[in-house]
Amino acid sequence: MDDTIRHPLAYARALRGWSQSDLAARLHRAAQAQPESLRSGADKAAVSKWERSRKEPNDESQLLIAEAFGVSPEDLATYDWPYWLPGQDQPVPLGAGSTIHALRTAQRAAMDPRRRTFMTFSALALAGLSAQWSALEPGRLATALNGSPVDNELIDWLQDSSTKLAALPARQREHTAKLMDAQLGTVTDLLEHGSYSEATGRRLHQLAATLASTCGWHRFDEGHHYAAGKLWNAALTNAHAARDRDLGAGILSDFAYQSIWLAHPDAALAPLSQALIHTSHPTARAQLHLRRARAHAALGRASDCHQDLTASEAALMTDSPHPSPTWAKWMSTADLAVDSGQCLLDLGHTRAALARIDEGITLLPATRDKTRGIFLTYEARSLLRPCPTWWWSRCMGHGEC
Image 1: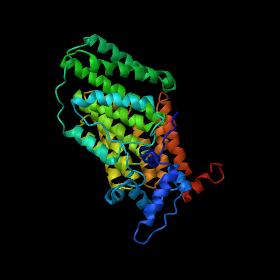
Image 2 (image 1 turned 180 degrees about the horizontal axis):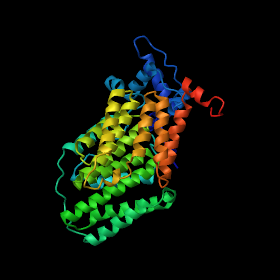
Image 3 (image 1 turned 120 degrees about the horizontal axis):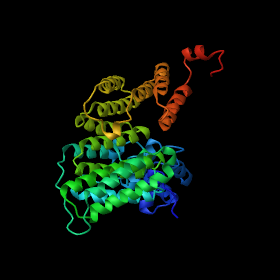
Image 4 (image 1 turned 90 degrees about the vertical axis):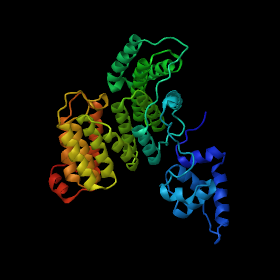
């Protein structure tokens, strides 16, 4: 059985069949070839520390690594370590011919989450994918001429059962996740081999997108971010084929959330900005603005963050005669309060952050236990920050520190 590959450097080595000692020897030769005959100082132990994220190579070592792998200085200057290394994955492009390929690729990634668990799409890849979604006109669906006919009754049953599975409590995820995967496989088979009209095909693509998005969140919760990204890529291609702009915007928001969660907030900005351009429902816009505020806060952009927080609050308070998209139904004043607190925490305003997070936890209904756990994690993070003067005065004599 293969070992899990958890770092881009290990993956780049594996692509070339190099051992850690092989790479160290190549770095040594690259250093010797420099005009000043630099000494790399890299050995197998150093490579092992880099791949376990126990130590980051210095600038000189990174130059030698780039030379060993044939990476241009421009790429090295554009991306932070280790995201300039070769072998980074690219999303399946949008288009009528990509929907099945994206679904099959996602299913393979979801079935074997051991490999490349570190990998997510880069900021550049996500920006390109969101731009495609914004500008590319979906092609007409190709109707299968051979195979079993797909009727609306069957799709109704699949939609109903999938909705019920998704609504079950998170503690049952161990069982429901497998059923959702099976549902996605069934819908993919119908798309690839079934016979259906264009209208029925759009319903199938919409169902595939919804299922792939949900299955992506299952993988996200398990920490399998490579598989989650592949599933969301498949979801976006199928939402695009179904001409469902609101669903596509929600999937771009999923990508953005993952990027923020993995400490790559810059990768979240393009998907969220494109989604905001093409989404009109106020609740959906409130969620998108809130997530973009999180990204700006993580990047230290206080003014942009506060603008998005203000826009999120205004949108959340706006009534609409239409129901919100399914992916935004959970958005509430509790979420706004807690995520605003997280933004303030990232910007260094610990006291105000704690007050907002406390407010959100109080507002959260008892039915959202999983979200409550995440909110409490935010609160714990705020309490672990170095204690400012006001906190000492609050907790002295009360046993709170």
